[in-house]
Each structure stands twice: as C-alpha cells, then as structure tokens.
Amino acid sequence: MKKKLIIILVLVILIIIGVMLYFYFKEKNATVEDYQPEEEISSEQMRQTIVSLYYKNKETGELMPEGRIIDSKELLNEPYKKLVELLIEQPKNDKLESAIPKDTKVNKAELKNDIVYLDLSKEFVDNHVGGEKEESTTIYSIVNTLTELTEVNGVKILIDGKEDGEFKDGKIKFTNPFVKTEN
Image 1 (cartoon, rainbow, N blue to C red):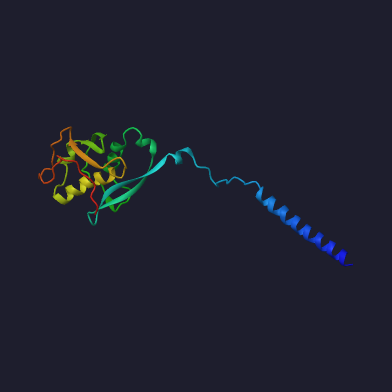
Image 2: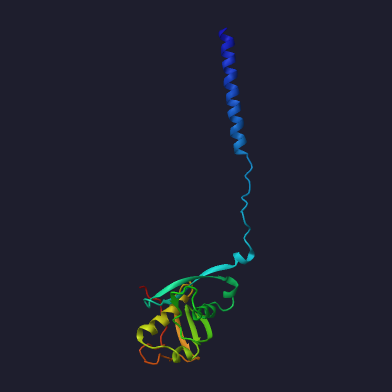
C-alpha cells in the first residue's frame, strides 16, 4: 500500500512539474504581437517640427517664445531667412506682437562659422519706433529665435548689405554680432 501511495505521489508531482514546464516554455515562446497605432501618422505629420519664435508681450514689453508647428521642408533651403520672415509676421497669440518693424524685408541670411549674417532692408531702421529698450527687444527677438538652433551662437545684422548700420538714435550699433543673453 505504501508503494502504491509513493508511486501515485511521484506521478502527481511529475504531472505538476510537467504542467508547470509546459506553461513556462509556452510563455517564453509566445509570439509578440505588433503594436498597431489607432491612427496612422501621415508623411505630412512626420515632416512637422516645432520652432520657437520670440515675440514681444503687448502688456509687459518682454520677449516671450511662441511655439509654431511648421513643415520642416520649409527650413531646408534657407532656414535662417524663413525663421526671421516668420518673426516679421504677426504671432498666433493675440497677447503678443512682432518686435520687428513693419515692411522689413529679409534680403539674405547665411551662416558663417557660428554667426548668422542677417541682411535686412532699410525699413528695419527707418520704420522702428525708437528707444533703447524697444530697439533691444527687436534685436533680441531675432537673436533669441535664431540661437535656438544649435549651430547658431550669434547674429550679425546688416542693413542693405552694409555692416556699419545703427538705429536712428545711435544707441545700438550693428558693428558687432549680437549673442543670446540669459534673462
């Protein structure tokens, strides 16, 4: 009787071990199902990127970034020119406004070493409201926007191709590149 009990007990243990091994290996060899997103991402969505454009707050006069989603193809040929042209346009947020004078045109924008040489039309100076704080806000709207790009560390402003420009009151001159300052 003891032998039968031991044999039955051993068989039960072997069956339990067999079942456990079966489930263990079944789990290990289970096929992983691919994750299917609810909605496919279009090629247009894949090309989109977010840029930070610095506009002037209408109430405080301080610069504030506005995130803008644009097609990255727009930045392929002339990224610096495109960003400044976006800055000239009015922001989407109605509490912000462009710090760049109306009718300013971007003649050319090119990167040399880590400085963007930004050639603007004479309207940049002629149509500016003036005042050192306003002028500084205008300059750093451009500088802060362009230095968001990793390859840019400063901006040299030219007016119709001339490097010795300045605002009408003569307080801010464009002789040296402007670099981003931390507030």
